[in-house]
Amino acid sequence: MQVREIIQLKGGTLYTATPQQSLVSAIETMADLDVGSLVVMHDGKMAGMLTFREVLVALKASTSCSDGLLVGDVMVKSPVTAFPDMEANDLRRLMIEKHSRYLPVLEGDLLMGVISFLDVAKAVLEEQSFENRMLKSYIKNWPDEPQI
Image (tube, rainbow, N blue to C red; front, side, top):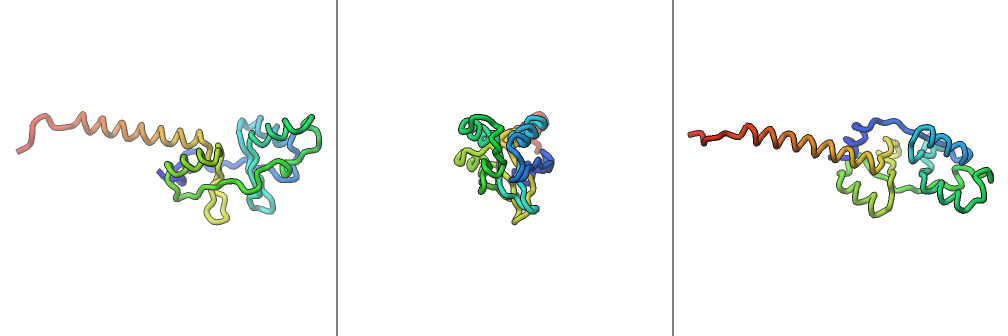
């Protein structure tokens, strides 16, 4: 299974923020949408990623969230990225090695979507379930006696 198939399964909805947006506003967006990441966009291109990890680190370092922090102050400026032709096993390995729960998927400069570790788990489970059903069907229809 390739990354492009996972993107197709989950859909291409992107949730975004801007570097100039207040961190408070971004946190509200993440909470309202029940998402763990926002793609930070500037001039139509990805400028970085904001995940709950960066939010927690910023909140720990700050006395309050109203300190005027902006998304651009805390975002990951050069996030690890995936590409559409990457195999799911390579994607999982990359996510584990880089401790990344969310990876933007880029085809050249085109942002195709964001894949979470949960998206990968769901896609792999779906693929395994399909293979399991096919194998059971094959075994069930196995001939009882050899054909001569």
